[in-house]
Image (cartoon, rainbow, N blue to C red; front, side, top):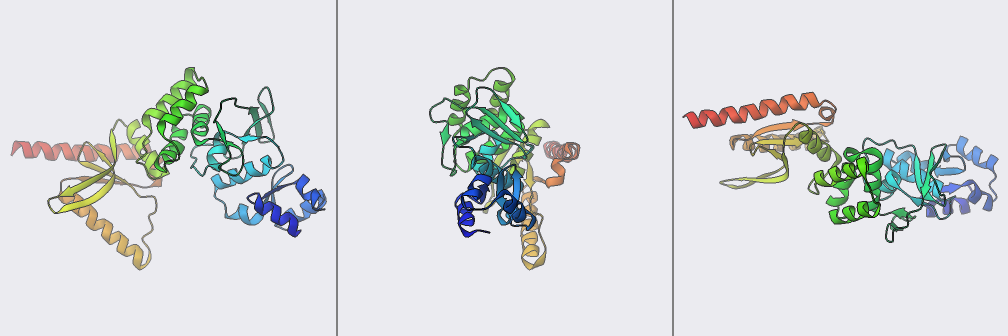
Length: 314
């Protein structure tokens, strides 16, 4: 690949356009050869990503790369919604990752070949360049995500933004007010704000908390538990004061370090049980089966209540 073109692509976060290639003397046919040789990936007509960057990227990171590539050929465009969320480095869950959504110089929404362009925002402070390209702020991005895909999907990004202190909840509320939402859009945002929890440290924890809420359980996040000898553990969730719910997203216990971690986790759980807690451990697959989680929780709560009744009787 032409070194000048390679340097330009790297300076733009690993992306380039057909027009930029032409400035370096690389024709459309030359770009096709680079794609066939595995040096470039075509992510949309006229938009390319360096193959190394694309291969190394996770799905949400690929959306960010695709967005950068498309924006490189559209002066004045502003990333919006899930694309802005991806550019801000926030997680996405339950959202299609193929479409590029931009604010542009249009009077009505236009969609074509995986690109949707919506009218520009007139709100002062709604757009920033902190991602290296123009994008709506994290607060506006999660509100747009919420109105497009619902509060469940948006809550994942909002929890992460709050936990990393990229936004505060009042900024999200202000963004929603500036967008003059009404009807179902307003209801979705109100639900997102009500359920947000900056204590959640991962996508799995946010999804676990949301599932527990759907099952009718009020869960407190990141609760520190101690006994007469001092601190025992900080647990992901505490339900009804005696049911500990832990989300295990790794499940990697191979090798010496893995076995040591497993042994330490067992000692931790044994100590919690000796204090009268029931421990429910969930993994990714459990989150796809609410009925399974409901059964585990029902048994745990029943056990706690039965033990409490027996103590009262004695």
